[in-house]
Length: 318
Image (cartoon, rainbow, N blue to C red; front, side, top):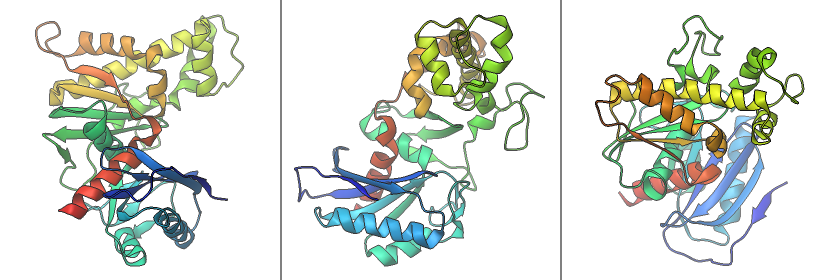
């Protein structure tokens, strides 16, 4: 069943639709040129490609019934071709080597833009949030895993084949926890939402706790806010590992700003100071060089929709 949340403001010019296509839900929002959400809706993500495309078309038709839509942007996790036209592989979606941009452009009869979800969220933060005014900066999307985006003077750096940067798979603990990528010791195995239960299990014998066996990440953060010793230790450990990863990125790129977004950023007060300390102590030339400012994202879970809608608008206007 569609969930539809209309706004009282209709008929605004320059409106675009941004989609956040997740493995569970397909979220869509009408975004104005100032990055504000005018209207929104959501539907469960379909398991079949044609059905997913049908749902996207239905969402656009529903929103376009009340708004004059100029373009549509789609943000998703996965690998795109360098031109952002073909979805090569998306782990939680049914598309494989699918020319999604062409398919939907023909069906919708409006310009369509595809973009990686981390890049979309980063663009939203650069245009309307924590990254405004920055030139050389990095966005970390810390959630189930770690996505990242590198900005160079208002341009997203993609690498030669469109897959950069994979900072979540920097090896911070050689021979450590097994990662789904095939390596061991990747940063996202220690500093992501899915890493929290593993760290909790590793530290359980060293701290008193009221946490149950095999707690969720949410249970761990709630316990930490209550002052639970194990919960606090897990979040401190999280910050330590994240800071180590940030120091590696800062050593290579020397950015002026690092913005932490994604689902785990809502609990940044539990780990960000520790991450800053770890980064400052481990960076090359510690104490003798300028240090990147580390901030939290401002747009929350809507960042991807806002960002990809703005990218679609800019591309449409040339």
